[in-house]
Length: 509
Ligand code: XMP
Image 1 (cartoon, protein in one colour):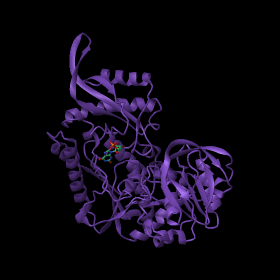
Image 2 (image 1 turned 90 degrees about the horizontal axis):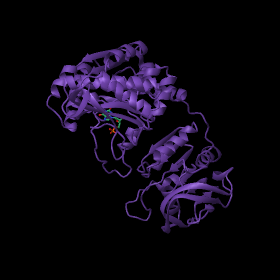
Image 3 (image 1 turned 45 degrees about the vertical axis):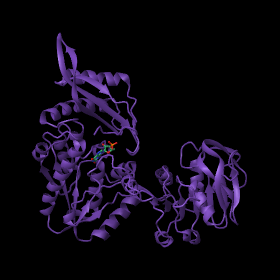
Image 4 (image 1 turned 30 degrees about the horizontal axis):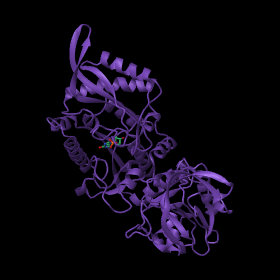
């Protein structure tokens, strides 16, 4: 395995992805981790990530210099390389010219990192500092027009550094550089598969839970379903799942999910219908954050009341994913702005004093889907698009009433049908409809109409942190619009949302 030290670069998750694509397991750790803690993890190699700081600035992030005494190979990327050079006695200075974007790299000396890479190759750079002098034992192995020291190597200690970003697609031989580090320098083996992950995760759950009981909130989404399967394979009947129907699901979804979950997960599931509680509490509420708070609170109350009926439960299972963990832990300890309160992270009923079991916390979404497939989860559940905990309440803009929910459900059902029929369901991160709180004038037959507007939102994304609006074919959009206006009473206009995230978000509220 590889430990990646997070110095705050926006590309950290990409480094992790690249390593895992090579079937080598890796973990991202904050700079506060000690050398002893790293030694305990017994990694084959350490990657120091890039970051936005300058190494000579006060307060720039540093990791325990003891990591260079562990006898473990190190690859420093951008800021990571500058940190290594600075710590080991070299000199880093503000560059005469900032380098941002493409740069042609010349490999000037042989290095294990550049095995099978010779001459000139296109790389991607983003730095304002440069290395002026390298420490003893290091040699310069590559340069660019603006950067004399674009790569360094200390083959004896197996320390390597690159000023460019090998993890981004723009660096043409980037994958090769990472592979060279993993296999030629660190002697890693390509042994990390979802099967091996599942085996380890099941063993770990067994060890930490023992013969105690686990409760899990099941939403029917891929994350909680896979979590349930893993925990169930580990402890069998000692797992109880709770599914809360909040009345804010899509058309027929509660019943379909119920049936699917029962059929495909031979797991102990308690279904709780709390729809009226949620809808009543939302009456008259239009503020998005208030909606979220109300739904979060009722969910907790209902969940807790049901969980209390399960005797001797010590653990709460959660389908937390890796991006949630990385996002909630800023490298510099600074609070990240709360854009929307997501009630599924950190919303554990405190007085229940349950310990957490989060077997997916080191996985990315696409890896969770692979794991689901490996564990034999029903294809439909594996490929379900994400659906927010507050459900349709944050897609009915303005007041949430049964009537407006009904309109949205019908619209959304048409949309889903068309998206699936056109083969787009799996290609999109999400596709859904939003009911707007304004009406517009239209004409139907010979008469004037004054009805609702719905917006269609379809996005592509890897992890929901950024997203692009989907370039759906005009013909498909036309068909969706026609069908909605013709088939759903109360809607006379359909618009398509062409905003990306950022600056917009995926959901409207
Ligand atoms: P935004 O709208 O913030 O959404 O771009 C990012 C992703 O998160 C989903 N989402 C939620 N999921 N509880 C959830 O479980 C929530 O409160 C929540 N709010 C947004 C959203 O659907 C998208 O996939």
